[in-house]
Length: 494
Image 1 (cartoon, rainbow, N blue to C red):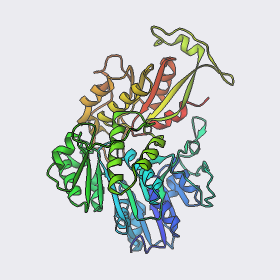
Image 2 (image 1 turned 90 degrees about the vertical axis):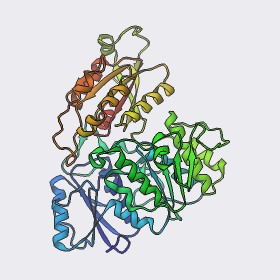
Image 3 (image 1 turned 60 degrees about the horizontal axis):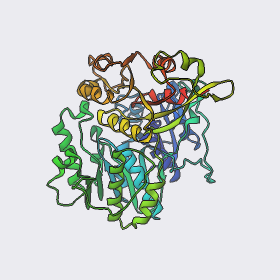
């Protein structure tokens, strides 16, 4: 059984950013789709809004529909998961998310975007450029993109916030339904020749692909629970690049790319240093940071390979406003006047200016950024982008490390990046089921090395610390790949 031939698909882990895109793609191609996840989320709400039957929590462990002829599962779902065992016992074919991508890629001219950092933004940018050029690309990206509007199954062109799914883990978060957080789509459902896909290196995911074009944004130490060593990471990227049929477009400013890819003959380098090809374009990007300049340069180089006119590329890049959880301005925290006046961190220059008036609130409007950064280089890039975008603000970072083994491997890097902020709260480490092996480390070890940093035992304690210490001139950045994003959405609510 193949994905193309399947008539009825059941998705295990349908709340995952990748599997949810496959569910929607399957539905658009006339297949019956249902699925389940261990917990409800923004993504499960969005999928359910399309009319897909989504079961949450214990309800998600009920029987796979009788008519199902293919199970698609997230790579986070182990082989001994009850539903995968049920599929095996019933003789239902199973495919992982990367295997489905590999099959789809075989019928398209495929452009893969890989790298330790920046691949989501680069994928989203290239998809927007290709769409603007009339190429009608199919795009799957590992985040939600406002420019890729999510539409319900009547698809009349209006944007909607979907109704929430019922089941365990649903309901309200801090007084607001998670479904109110909808910010775009992870799928641009084009019917054209090109398939633009974010290709993740974790667990060898991208090895199911043999792309026609490959963008590599950078090569860095990450996912060491799987790769173990930098040498293994380098080897994985090199082997993937060698499978590329036409051109590899790589960042020449990145030492990892230069180290690993330097002997390839089919490579095009981009960058702001001498390693890059002169673009001849002057751009005004809406997304801040030097890292996003590099992302845009990679897209320009690729667009030229596809024959896209520079003016189309320029307009599309300049229209791009960002993605979900990538330096995303989620809203503003209105801090009560009394709280600001009493704050122990009011500090020098913390006088009382004219307050904002609101419904029963008196205080100050403080920007709140949510960012997915969970690697030291990403944290550094985000803080630098914040200083560029908000030069007069004090940078207040609330960071939740993701995975204990990553925290052990990159602890010194976390310290060196977080010290760049003006104020820091570090939450306890976010654990991921199946990827932790009893590693002995705590966020306290990071906090102890950063002067003035504060430790929070959980997200709830971090929220109270923010409310107690925030200053009228702060920019609040809530950062991490775990559930810390819920805090960013919750704290802006009146």
